[in-house]
Amino acid sequence: MKCLKCQNELAQNIKFCPECGTEVPKPLPKPNEIKQFPPILNANLAAEFLTISRAQLYMLIREDALPWFPMGARKAFITDELIAWAKKRSRGGVNNIIQADSSCQRVAN
Ligand SMILES: [Zn+2]
Image 1 (cartoon, rainbow, N blue to C red):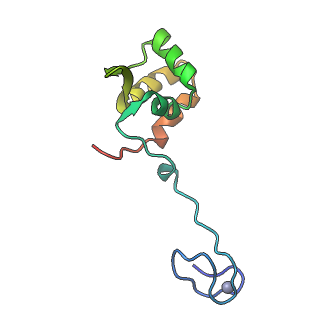
Image 2 (cartoon, helix red, strand yellow):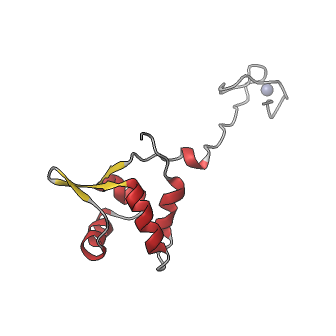
């Protein structure tokens, strides 16, 4: 990478050009690095994963049999099952939910 102002060759991960002091722009994150989700989600993460509010999440649990399982006194969700559910549901006209699929990357297996 070269400095935008003076064309000096720059080392990686530096913030300013050592020759002219111009700030080096940060590279944009790759799409699948933006957000990572574990394979098991709590309600907050599940809502974030599906890009819906917690109220919507609980509404879906009541109305649509969104897949979940009890973890102690709380509800937990399996990421893969949510993806399958979102794919099935997106055919019925819910578009934003399917974004969850492309932003998901397992951090553990
Ligand atoms: Zn420079």
